[in-house]
Length: 532
Image 1 (spheres, rainbow, N blue to C red):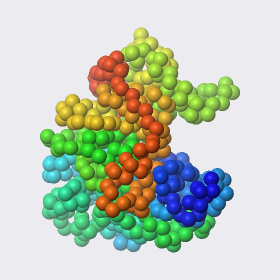
Image 2 (cartoon, rainbow, N blue to C red):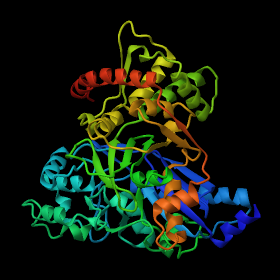
Image 3 (cartoon, rainbow, N blue to C red):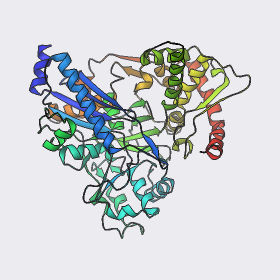
Image 4 (cartoon, rainbow, N blue to C red):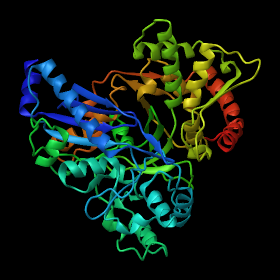
C-alpha cells in the first residue's frame, strides 16, 4: 500500500479517460498497467431534430465528475491527495462531426457516429476513392453538409472528433491519434498520414474547391502511438479539475477512438489478431495480413494506434434495446417490493439465456434503436416478434435478445471469414456484453465459429486502453513496438479464459440468422409505417 501511495505521489502513474456512449470513465493505472482507482459519469445521447447528439457542456460536466470520483477513490484507498500523474490519455467514440469556426465556436451541434444521414455523401466518396467511406465518418458528414448547401461549411476552420476536441481544450494541440484519424479520412499506412491522393481528389470536387479552406488545413494532425501530443495547460487542468488540485505540465499521448483503445485493451494490435467490443454499439476488428479483394460497404478499413491496417465490422446497435428490457424487468420487481442490484439482475437474466431452447422458442427481435448500415437500415425501430405458437419463456426471450445483439456484427464478420478467408489467430471479447462469465463469450464463439478469449480486464474497457497508451508513451524502450510492450509488460501475467465454439451452438446461430435475414423486411416496414 505504501509503495502504491509513493507511486501516486511521485506521478509514476497514467490516467486514461474515455467518453463512451453511455458512460464517461476515468482509470488510474500504475507502471505495470494495474488499475489503482476509477471514477465515472453516466450520460446518454439525445435525438434532437432528427440528429443524435451530446451537449458539449455535458462533456465537461462528465469529465469533471469522472475525475472527481477518481480523485476521491484515490484519497479513500491510499490516504493521499491526487495532484499529478505521469501521463494522460483521452479516448472517445470514434467518428462523427465537430466543426468549429476561427473563433473556436461550434458551428452545428455535435453529430455522433450513431447518425445515418450521410448516405448520399458516403456513397459518392466510396465510388470516388474506391475505398469504403462509412456514413459515420467525419468526411462523409462534411461532404453531406456541402451537398445540402449548409451555411456553416464556409466558416469551418477546424474539424475533429470528440477525443480530439477534448484533447485540444486540455492541451491547445489540434492533433489526433492515427486510429481515430482513420475514422475522419482514409489513412495511408505507408506514411502514417491521411491519404494524400484521396485528399487531392476530394479538394478537386466541383462542390468543394471554391471554399476558402482546404481539407488538409482543417483536419487535425496525425500522430502514432508513442509520440508525444502536448502537455496539460493551466487552463486544461482547470477544465478537468475545477478544485485546482491537479497541476499543469502533464504530458498527453495522442487522443484515440474507442476502436483503438479496444485493440490495446485486448492485446489485439498485431497481425491476425482481433477483438470484439460489445456494449451500446458493437464492432469487431481484425488486424490484416493482406488486402481485401474488393471494397465492401459493410467493412471499414481503419488502423491500429500504431498504424497497421484493420478491417472493421462496425454496428450501431448492440445492447441498448436489451438494456431497456432489463430496466423494465427491474421496474416490475420494484413494484413487488423486490430490490436487486443491477449486476445481479443482468447476470441472472444473461445466464437464463443459456437455458433457452435451441431455436430460441421461434422468437425474433431486432435491436435497432438507430439505423444500421450493415443491414441497410437508415433508421431504427426496436422490434420483438413472435408466432402465435412460439414458446414465450424468459429463457427464450433472453436468448433471442442476446443472439440478435450480435446479428448485424455477424453479417459483417461473415464477409471477412467466409468470403475473404481472413485468418484469425485470436479473438478477444470485451465490454459489458461479456461481464457475465461464459454467456456473451459463448454466444460470440457461436456467431463467428471461432475461439473467443475473455481476460479478467474485460470490463475495464477503453479507459484502461487509453491509460496503457499514455503509459507506453512514457515507458517504452528504444524501438519497442506497441505490440511488444503490451505482450511483455502488460498481458504476460493476465488471467484469461478461452472458449471454443460448441458445434451445436454454431448450428443454432446459423439457423437463427436465416430468420434474422428473412425478417429484415419486417424492420423495413416498421421504419416506413411506424412514425411519430
